[in-house]
Image 1 (cartoon, rainbow, N blue to C red):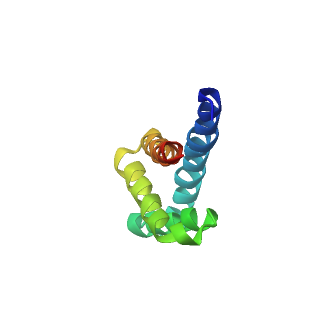
Image 2: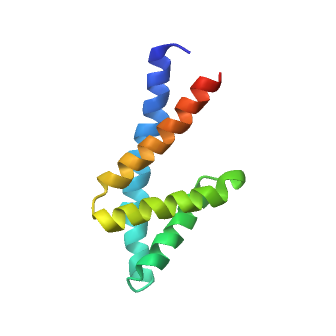
Length: 104
């Protein structure tokens, strides 16, 4: 794949999902879960991680993605910045894509 194609794939599969998914899951779902669980941070973070994983519809990656979702939730909780989990999410996706590019 040409360099330009890889850049477009990186933007489409790492950058855009990293931004939009974090806005949705940490920015909206986690806040809603905090209300539902009476502001119990651990419960809200783990429930959001479970929803995050389920929405990806990948049974093989279900458990690791739950932990990733919780990690991103704790990053958001401790830093109080949506930009931190966004950056981590983008880096996670970019690393996975880069590994795929190198394996071909």
